Length: 512
Image 1: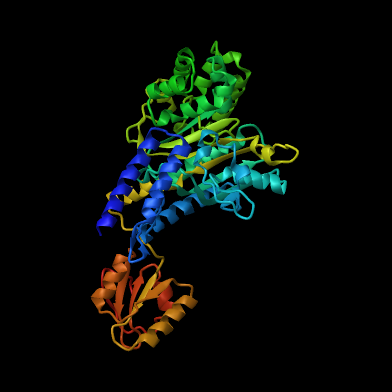
Image 2: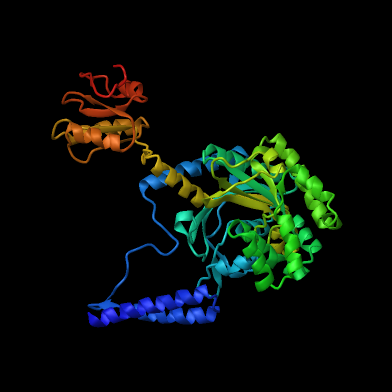
């Protein structure tokens, strides 16, 4: 026992060493070396020859109980309904891909990819998102036009924050449009889908920030950022929703070697928010007007807002120059939806008057996406490009918000779709109960029956706890006790209860 205590203490100390090295951003080799020592210590923990382990889920993952799954199912149904409303069809792809398929597509986030051990000569990785596998699917099957949705799990070796809906294993709900269309029409449709989903889920106030990668690149160029630093500076700007500008500037200058003058100029632009009028002003800006890239992006932003007005969603959309999205494959418009605290301004008029002030709730962004016209060409042998634009709904963060909302409001969540519960008021009636439930099943009615013969109060309590508004009816020995919803009563009486004798009701049931 004393030896076991010493090993546990050593594990604690070594764990602190590993965490300290990670915090100090030590090299991967140094961290791996210390982790190896930690694993060897854990392997020594034995009791009577049996390995000791903690019964828990892996870091960054979680289980879901029936109530939580019921909330998730409602969210999924809302999302899928919107996707189908816009004419999308669904596909599926493997949960892992060849490592080379994923390499070089995610910028600095590539370090978050889960690599698998060599399996039969193939180097594999768990998929980081659903977009790159979709592009590979298009190139491999020579598809040049499709509107598709895909809902599946992805994996990221990130530092999880469970209370904020950030996990290592999580679902993504993607909608993408591939093919040649009139400029900005598919992009506007993706934003309309985000608007529909977040409105239908009743998550409260939200806003959708939009920008364009060409505007960002043009801005970097006119501010004096070297060409080879565009992507790394873009990744730093992408942190503005998490850390203040002073910290972002410090990383640009101290960690990445950008001049302070260039950083200050970037700071002036990324503080701008507005709508179509901001795009018009920037087109006249002395610096930005010198960049053809920026001007092309600004013209498309103007066109995008004109379509958004037709789609009736401009009250929730803001042109925000601080939006970067660090993934390498974006080539045009980018967007991100965030939940906002009550009382935040969400009107474009407020934005234009520089009174737009929003604090995001702890779950952060709940949707994001953009245009990636060059990604499919990376996989095509002939480099053939297929224009693509899409959006991903952050289901886990939405779920975290809705789960907390249900808890705060003490909402009663139905975990089954049972419409009728059959129980008996007397003993030795199992065969009669089974005959009755069979008739109900044959009639397409969702029902359940008690495993044993409960008394009235137990049966009534059971159906009430399931969250369904059911009324109990007492009948004679030939029929049993049936707890039935008012909605189904006429159908049940017609199919099953023609020999009903009793009419004692409780809780204001339907008329007999």
